[in-house]
Amino acid sequence: MKKQFFLSPLALILANSSPAQSLYDIGEDYQESFPLEWVAGADIIYDDNVLPGADTKDASFAINPSIALATRATTPQTVWDIKGLLGFIYYFDKPIGAGGEDINSQSRLTADLIHNFSERIRFVNHSLVAYELEPAYSYGYATSRVLGAYTTWSTDNAVGYRFTERVGNYFGCRVMNTTYTDAEDNDRFNWELYTQFRYQLSPQTVLTPEYRFSQLEANGVASDSTNHYLTFGAEREFSSTLKGVFAAGVQYREVDQGTSSSSPYLQLAINAQVNKDFKVSAFTRYGIEAYDTVLTDPDPAIGSVEFDDKRTLRIGLSSDYVISPSLSLTGGLDYTPSSFEKGRSVAEPAYNGSISDAYENLLNAYVGLTFKINEIFSINSYYTYTNSSSDVSDRSYDRNRISVGASAKF
Image (cartoon, rainbow, N blue to C red):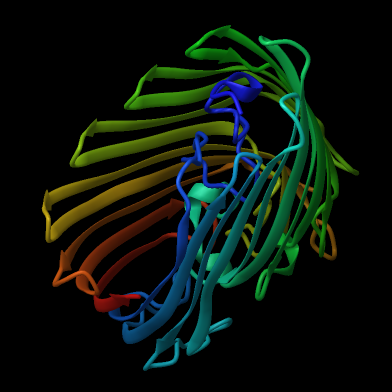
């Protein structure tokens, strides 16, 4: 199989990440297989705000046992890559308030399949299933911890055809479902069709114009909607240690019984291996999001409001630094400002007055140390700080979490 099969070593993952992928992902040239690996461990956590958004700020210790697995199998035609985490968080002091539970799942499974039927035809699948309490901000749909635990699954299937050495096309379908335990109005089912044209401008650069059409079904009082995306992008291998993908264009959103909107759309991801010990990854995405659009107005006379135009900028930064063979440092942040516009009452009875726009900023930062005792055992410690500043009722909070744990790899 040619190294440049299907136009680029970055072509294994499309420029616009599927729901099964983190926004950090830029594509990976899967070449090395490894057998099934298991990591079992447990963390002791101190959380000073176990139920963000509640009337009172309660602290509690918790335990987070987990077991993780990873494996990859590669042949000249097929790649399987599977990663999973099964775990839960148990609070010794049950959170007081609506939605407070003393035990919650923190589990996730992802699977990637790439199969080359020939030198011209490729099939790609990315799938995910998760049931978790702590939001995964880099996956592009969670914006606040106050929504509580959620279950999500998704699958992205695409077929690619290479017409010439330089020209090809992907056609695919994505399906995603997200259900919240305590936030019915945020449940969403979404299906999407897309086509991405690919032109290899040079051995290091691929141009990727793309069109996407998505149909979203919402639960509760939230409205169904339709989205169209037209973007022009590129994948660039600046060097063997610096790679990136970029897409920019326009998004048009139609809301059933609501107001249509259009917006610029931007997505960018960069991975840099600065040196053998230091790696940095970053992403940015801006557009209109269909999640978390039904909020409670601070004025009790207004009640529940749906915002047809929720514009969100997502910025993420992650880094890993190997201080010594036995000690490594990791850190990062997520910054997510959102503007909620074109609000309308969905309360009973409906409020007929004007509704103000709302703004929210969420910052999540973390730093951690891992000490490797030997080839099997490791100990770690993490600190995470989260701040939400919001115009919306019960969504402003500060939160500090400290964890200390140990793990064994076998």
